[in-house]
Image (tube, rainbow, N blue to C red; front, side, top):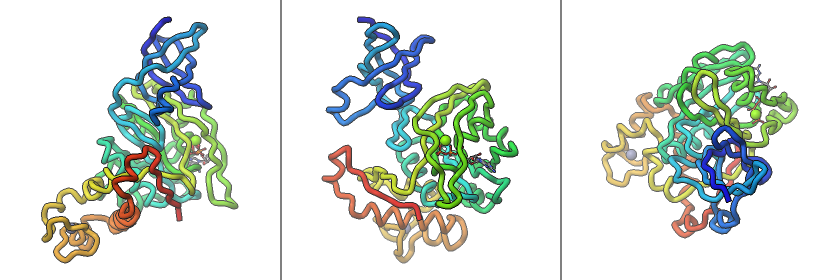
Amino acid sequence: MKVSKGRIRKALSGFYYVDAEGRTITCRARGKFRQEGRSPLVGDWVEVQETGDEQGMVWEIMPRRTAFDRPAVANIDQLVVVASRATPATDPFLIDRVSAIAALKGCGVVVCVNKCDLAPGGELAEIYRTAGFPVVLTSAETGEGVGELKALLRGKLSAFTGNSGVGKSSLLNAVQPGFSLRVAAVSERLGRGKHTTRHVELFSLDCGGEVIDTPGFSSFDAQELDLDLKEHLPETFIEFRPYLADCRFIGCSHTKEKGCAVLRAVKEGDVPPSRHQSYLRLYGELKDVKSWENQSPKSKRVWTEK
Ligand SMILES: Nc1nc2c(ncn2[C@@H]2O[C@H](COP(=O)(O)OP(=O)(O)OP(=O)(O)O)[C@@H](O)[C@H]2O)c(=O)[nH]1
Ligand SMILES: [Mg+2]
Ligand SMILES: [Zn+2]
């Protein structure tokens, strides 16, 4: 049997499309992965056992640099968190939660405020600039900021994420018109996107770099909040870091303590209040995560968009 090495470019309905030496091999995953509670991800470098006719089985997954549950991607350099102030408006908590998880995994984050032609994104952009993220204001409709976004994508593997309908696929089409990804109008009645993108897929940019389009978050998505995040939560809010050593009490939770340097920074405008509010919300949700829950890879908690 022929063994080939390649990378998973697309995952759809239990099939994995592996790019190997210029060919696409359509694969199933080996049963062992399911038993171990693992699954191959788009972006994974894999070994494939070929069965002929460009078909095969994902046999081994090479060690990953980064891996995410949501979006389900591996080995990315950065997450592009797409947000919008127009319908469907993004709850900043969503940006803060996903960027905390990214920080925990040592993965970069770019905040992209889209639909600027419909609603100005300046205020939201300012929060994330203050927090220290690269921020870009865009309109997939008018092309505003698309060149700037493109510059941030060059030479990297980036995954686009954000709530359904914010314009992830539209932005990718704007970055490279040849992509022709499917997009659909949001439901004005429900104020939500329609979950138009149904699978995760990686594309190469002509300008150098690669992007992954992913299905948008919905209101009822579960997200893994684990013990690791609980233990490192303050550091995952990157702008808290300079203050963490200055709190009066060792073990300060940065929620209400006297002499807390983070709370002082919020008061003085060095940490955006909405970021600290998200910290408090995550802190509250993580309080109940016990070490035993973490033993199961399926330890998921539900959250809801407001
Ligand atoms: N006016 C305006 N409309 C936009 C912009 N970006 C996207 N849209 C529209 O918003 C709708 C949703 O866009 P999509 O690209 O499908 O959104 P998505 O984030 O990929 O959504 P999912 O695939 O469901 O996660 C479409 O009707 C787009 O034409 C923008 O910058 N300005
Ligand atoms: Mg889409
Ligand atoms: Zn503190």
